[in-house]
Image 1 (cartoon, one colour):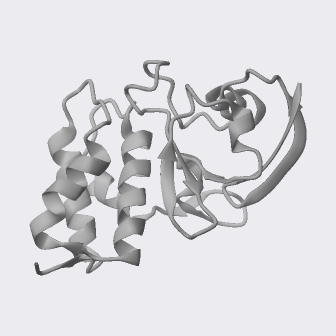
Image 2 (image 1 turned 30 degrees about the vertical axis):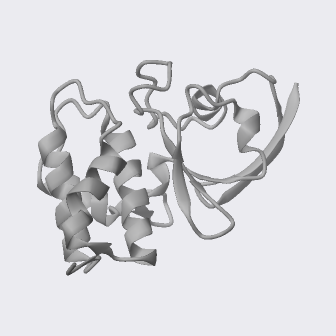
Length: 177
């Protein structure tokens, strides 16, 4: 057993004792009832299970939860797919984040099993662009680098990419060059 303490979707959690070999996805599902991150391949290949880790330097990154132990997240700030939307006092979703909203508007998913991973990846890209706008000439390669390692069994890639491109443009995060 090991102690785990973290910030999860803006809320302090723990310390709580968890098995030393517990994968983070199991912690999220079984201990926190946060089931939005999906267990796809279980080998870190499909990226359906990713969460966002907010680093102390202000950057954010995707981390695969199926191959990363819960204890690795000790002391970290973690966002799951459930942490993106704004909620009212009763916990009901009243506003999606820009990526979620654009994915819905553009029907960027089919079965949606992979959607949480794509939302997290696109969110990390948007946050990167908010720190330093992307050059128009590098936009496609930046989107590919961010989303290209996610696997969609329904072949929904085109709409995910289009929606991400559109959000970056709508937010003014793409500059000439």
